[in-house]
Image (cartoon, rainbow over all chains, first blue to last red):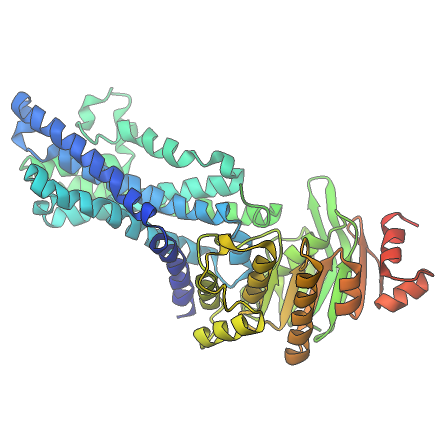
Length: 264
Length: 239
């Protein structure tokens, strides 16, 4: 119960931040909406020029919306963590009874909230703009959403750990890491397009299995259990690695006194 | 004893920041860690709070082994320092609400109202922390440090860079708090009149070691000096 209260306190801290800053909320929704609009037009063009896209009009739109789930989930962990560093607040947090794992859980919670604020408006706007509703995907959509959310969390925890270790000079890792995954996640094209040597690397990422699974559903091939189980297993591995890295760096930060001197 | 430290050592590579320090602080007392920059005061406080792990040594705080079970005691202590800050965009009330919940404070709204009254934060309570002056921020940091009515209060330069009026008010609030609750205070400071006013004991540190220990008046007498400031200069300059 006390743990829940502390996790709630940390959620509240970031909800206060969002509530007090409308530009932040608008920005959360702005980029996914712009991405969706761009890929909506690209879809309209390719529907008349590409047999593959014409098979399923929502292929690219669903891809861009789910890519944003991964992207926002990762930033949803790292940016709230950066907020603690920007405000030099880590010292206060860790002289309180807040446990590191409680901070992690609260970051995952705020990441979920920020992801929903970012992606849901874009998904809803796609309905009147392009007559495409990602929600028609049904139950698999929830599975894909959760899988990508967890992948984003794992990456976010790894990046946060590295920034805690190396300081805010390494903050661009939040963008560098996620965009390094984009080409090999097969967001807009099948993994088989990649060079042979790169395909095993791609298939070591949960995101590649999610996007392959998404295409299978949209192209009428049904829910691919193999991709689901692979993504699930990889997510369990990566979230455990992300949490372990963060906790290990936290221990290192206590040995080196980084918690007291964290900041810009 | 509120604090018992034995053989406390902290090394950063080849540099020794705290060197086999031993001290005990009785419950209800107010003690100052005094010494020049780099003497090891802030490092000692950070280790006592669990923000830093020592290289070796043992620490018991409020009867609890801090190295094994610090979470059992963190709810009963608190800390203020100009070197760490609070979320800038949150209002004073929001900051105190977050920290009150982190410390598991009961009747939190009432506690915040009471602190706002005692520390004259009434007109600031719904303003963003970033909009406040240095003196106002220090009052908010003190309110955060008192939110859980700590039995042990650790303060790192509590009135650094404040004007004499604000500094005097803060010292007054700290005296009142200690008189009312019987809390133990340990503070690191460079402000000698502050130490003479607030503390009944001084631990003099230099190069990571405790080089002297006594009451402010006792130390002045021992060094044949008029006040603590002159003692400080003697210690800092290795006289």
